Structure formats: structure tokens, C-alpha cells
Image 1: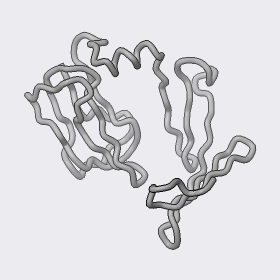
Image 2: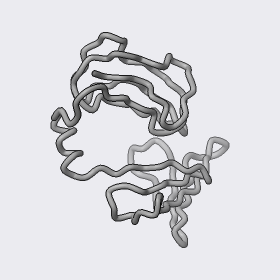
Image 3: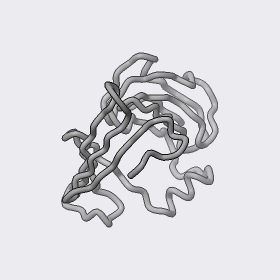
Image 4: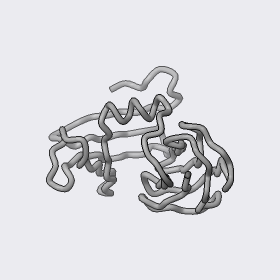
Length: 152
């Protein structure tokens, strides 16, 4: 694969026997990642849940949502009742906290920015509500599954 136009960073991707090799960057900043996929909890990769992505041997569980639920969330529909806990999807460092306890948020509004593997990931509100708790501060290190914000 050749570098993508306008990406500002060279990269190369190759797949051999189910193992994906990613090379990103040039010179001394070049990084190499080995990525594989596996079934979790005995479920097939075609089921709605049960996929684990391994990045350099570190497992990252992935839960795939059904198209109906993802479409409802994207449309801003209130898909749940009661408090909703927003958890870090992967280990990383909190870069920004965009809300405070007591803030009213809209569906898909940014809440927290977490840096993982040199990429910033913005966690967004799954629905409109009021922030009842912010459990992290900028600079904090979080593990996958750590609850960072609670919305009611």
C-alpha cells in the first residue's frame, strides 16, 4: 500500500496469514505494529459481539453494535434510561476534559479526549443528559473499561 495523499505521514500495510503488519512514519519516528483479530467468548466474528483485536500482543475487546442501534445513536435517539457510564475503550492518557459535573450535554457531544498509541480519541455522549460525575482529570492514565464520565 502506498502512502495516502495528504496524510502527512508515510505508511505501509501488509497482510500475511491473518497477521497485519503496519509501518507508520519515516526515519527514527517509524513505528511498527502487528495486528491480529480473534473470536472472543466462543462467538463467531460474524456475530454482533465477540471480536478481539490484538495490537502488538495486547488484546483489545471490541463490541460491534447492530446497525439498528448504531443508527438510533447517530440520530440522537435516547436508547437507554437511567445513568449511562462512559468508559475508556482502550488504555491511554486523558488529554482534555471537555465537561464538568452538572453540565447539560447533547447526544454526540464531546466529553473526554484520550490519547492512545499516539492518536487522540474523543469520547462522545451516547445521548442527551446531565453530567453527574467526571471521574478523571487531564494527565490521568486510564485502563480499558475505566469509567470516565457518568450521564443521567
